[in-house]
Length: 183
Ligand SMILES: NC(=O)c1ccc[n+]([C@@H]2O[C@H](COP(=O)([O-])OP(=O)(O)OC[C@H]3O[C@@H](n4cnc5c(N)ncnc54)[C@H](OP(=O)(O)O)[C@@H]3O)[C@@H](O)[C@H]2O)c1
Image (cartoon, rainbow, N blue to C red; front, top):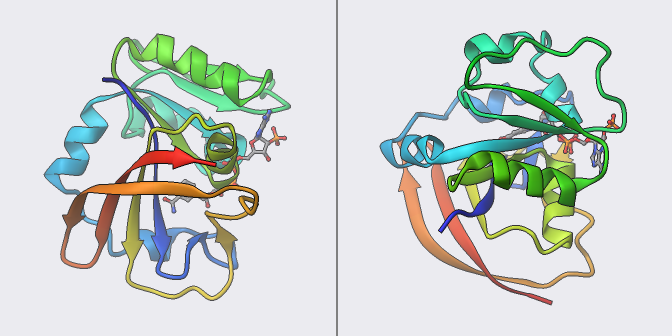
């Protein structure tokens, strides 16, 4: 069954970007793995937070180079004035009515495939709203000390997970969890 999941690379101490706002150190040890590529293949739409969307620098690059050539839904209060370049597979929808609306639209566009959510802030909202089915967390072999924490602002929640897959590459371990129960 199609699922809503978020997938991020974190440092062992839980940061998705370093104290300078950079992610390169986390990706240095990343290697594509067939399981991860298959999961990407089964992803039919992606929901991005505005800050994650802005990481591309030039938004027109998505149509030419982004690994997910699918409909993209960007959660933002301020859609860009110039609509970014699209192609026959990749389109942009800027969603201002909140995460729930973005997920509903992404599920419809995914056409039975999975929906991936990217961004720390919006992943936290996803958990708070009880809308996530799975987490796929890859651990990079470093301690960053400071930066942007993935699991923050969740103090009111207790979430029970079930590990159902681990994917190991030379340097990283990726753990896939199902969300079993959220209180
Ligand atoms: N390590 C990894 O695997 C990985 C992957 C992806 C990203 N990252 C890092 O994570 C960073 C992004 O995470 P983040 O937590 O800063 O931001 P984010 O989740 O990507 O985006 C947050 C922004 O989205 C908009 N937004 C969020 N909720 C909204 C709502 N309900 N309605 C309308 N707009 C809403 C707001 O922007 P506006 O108010 O400006 O519109 C908000 O500031 C990136 O800079 C990148 O470095 C790491």
